[in-house]
Every structure is written in C-alpha cells, then in structure tokens.
Length: 355
Image 1 (cartoon, rainbow, N blue to C red):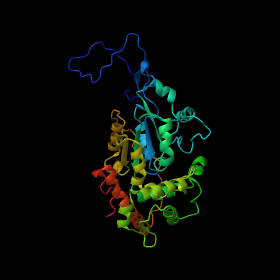
Image 2 (cartoon, rainbow, N blue to C red):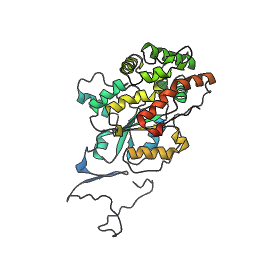
Image 3 (spheres, one colour):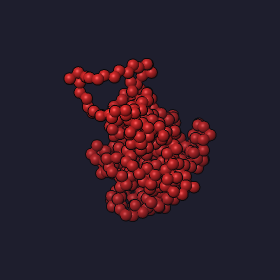
Image 4 (cartoon, helix red, strand yellow):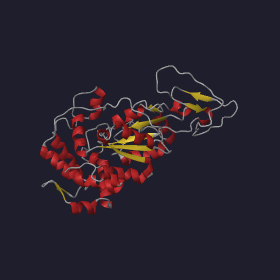
C-alpha cells in the first residue's frame, strides 16, 4: 500500500539496478494468478494460508485496549473485525452449537473471514478485554475453535487507577442503551469503597487473599509470599472465577482485574511465552504512542508504520478517589505488582512506583 488516497501508477519492471537489494524473491509460475487490493497483493495459490484471527488483545479492561486496537487498525495490513469486542468466546459463545465445526463457523462470523482467506498478507484480530480475567472459560475455547498459532497482547495499567476507571465506566449514565445494558446495574447504588469491600469479601470467601487483613487493611507479606504460586492459591482462583466472573455484565471483579500476574499465569501455562506481549498504558505517555505500537507491530511481524491518529480512545473525566482509599489500594496491589518481575523479567521491576 502507498498509504495514500491519491491515484497510483503501477509499473512492472523486468530489471533493477545492481545496487538495488531485493529482500525476498518470489518465483511465480507461468499463468499464476495474483489477487490485489488497495492494501496488498497475494498469490491465489496461498488461499487460506493465514488462519483468522491472527491476534487477540486479551485485556485488561480500562487499560488502553481500545486505543491499542485503533492504532493497530490504522496499519494498512490490518483489517478490523466486524466488531472490536467480539466476545465470541464468552458472552456470545454459541451454546446451541454441538460440534467444533459449528462453534468455529460461529466465531469466524465475527471477522471478514472469506476475504482474509483470499489475502493472507492481511491480518485481523479481536480485542475483548474480558478474556484476560476469564481464562478458565476462554482458554479451552480458543484451543478448540482457533487451533492455530495466535499472537496475544495484554495492556496493563496502574491497577489503582484501573479500578477507579472501571467503576466510573460501569456506573456512568452516558452511552447507548446497549452499552448501559452490558455495563450492568449491580454497582449503580454503591460507592467506590463499597464495591472494593464487595470484591475483597468475594475473594476472602473463596480463600484467595488470606494475606489481606480486612481490619488493618494491610498485607501480611510473609503470608503473601508463602501463599502465592501455591496449589491452594490455584484452587481458590479457580473457585473465584467460577463463582464471581459473570456473563453479560461488566460490574464484577473490581480488584481482581488488577492482579495481573495472577491472571497472566494461566495464559503463560497454556501458550508459548513468545506468543504473549505485555504492555503498559503509561508507556504511551512516557515513551509515546508510536513506541508502544512499534513493539506491537514487531510482535505481529508486520512492517513498522507511523500512527496518524494518536488520540486516546474511550476515555472519560471523573472525580479523583479519596486519598485514604488510594493509599489502601496501593498497599493491596504493591506485592502483586512486584510479582510481575518474576513472571516478565527485570524491565517490570516496580512497574507502578507508589513511593
């Protein structure tokens, strides 16, 4: 693609200058058909060579997934899905389908699958931020209906700020009727602090956070480090997901969605580490949008492309949280943030400084 709206002139040359470097040569057979779009040119013989989808943005909710998907979709070799958040593996999963083939056909309806099969140089992906948390439900479904290599991306954000943004979104009266419906009504009559207490109670009841003292609102670090990564934690996490991760509403799991290492663990156990790229929303501010997009495009093995519209997407203004609430949430999340280094390496040392 020449990435332009202006008319183009195509020239077919039977020779090039000696100093011209051809990175890759493709030998075409006599009479071979080529399929061209404004974005790409493919060999007809390569039909279906790239399965759909090529990538998934798994979450986290309110951590910049909408923005990342928009920036990537500006690339000439990326085609948007029919809807950004397909939810084909959770909310819109076809419960009536009885075979794998039927479930595959249902999920592929959310993409321009027929066209993508004809043009395998193009990629398309899903961005459903509920997938990261709902791993127990989603991972087995991915393995069933998308039995090919997929690149995964996860956006993270300071979990304290993420929690506040999540609460403000689902309790806002702004939006379409469909948006208001999917946000749910469960938190409409509750304060931010009451919703925090509700999720702490839910996690406590499942045995998930024995290290949290609900009275002093402190983490027992000795208990924390003895417990995390244990079989007891795995069992409690499975219980929590089954009991408290709800369908067709966004009003659940306020705090657990910010426990990134715990959520990522299941994905790293299920898929190759190299297939998962974890990014930070804050890097879009400190290092620039382009730097984050460049990393994502490298992960997708696509040529670099300059983002034209770097505006943030799906944002809103709201009142700041109370200082004592912020301090409490920072105490809760600090050891969880430290666990990111153990999973992802030194670059994730103190990812959100609370000093």
